[in-house]
Amino acid sequence: MSAKNISLEQNYWNDFYSKWVIDIPSQFCVQMLTEVNPKHTIVEFGSGNGRDSHYIAYQGHMVVAMDLSREAVEKSRSTMEKRDIEHAVFSVGDVSVEKDVAGVLAVGRERGHADSQSLVVYSRFVLHSLDDEQEALFLSALAVHMEVGDYLYFEYRCSEDAGTEKIFGNHYRRFVDTDSLSSDLVDKHGFAVEYCRTGQGMAKYKNEDPFVSRIIARKL
Ligand SMILES: C[S@@+](CC[C@H](N)C(=O)[O-])C[C@H]1O[C@@H](n2cnc3c(N)ncnc32)[C@H](O)[C@@H]1O
Image (spheres, rainbow, N blue to C red):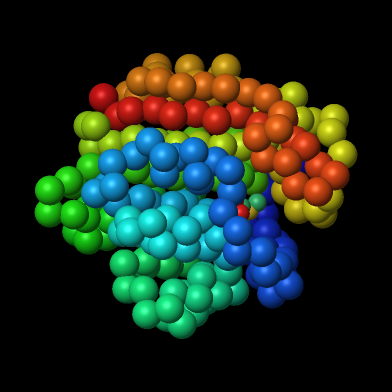
């Protein structure tokens, strides 16, 4: 697949999240939380049903999250309301639209801890659901609206994953070339890549053990 149709994708994810109930955090989310400052606000793009955002909020962080799927966002909100958690904010938006990305980052900055205005931007299994143009728009928006010292955490299916068996088919996927993404972050978008790993065993789910890459980058 080369280009992605946003409204088809929105329908796919609305349907998916009307059935998907797992609210256990990802391994990557747990890795991220073991190393960030507890006062940092986490901004999650492509939060799905909120499995990671909820866990981030349970750990006491302010979390501001956005997803394309209204179904997913409503479910995420209702889980937080049932637990009377007010430090988790969810909205519907598109990561390839600059004003949506800027708006979410601005809310993260406003609602941040008084002692720490830095943000950690977290996005898991989203980059590979964007086409090339949407990824470029997302990265440009982050580059413009993130501030010096903010951190970026990405996990996604990389090129090596193209041949592995998948449990969920039927939606847009692009296998991301990690060398090229890493160069773009450094050369085009003003980040320092501090950590980059590719492998299996990092996002195993039932019989599926995808090749994924994790990137941690700091805004310069
Ligand atoms: C594979 S799911 C990952 C969800 C969650 N991060 C997780 O790890 O469970 C991909 C998510 O990206 C969202 N998404 C896809 N394209 C998007 C876009 N252009 N803007 C915002 N969210 C998008 C989908 O709605 C879906 O919730």
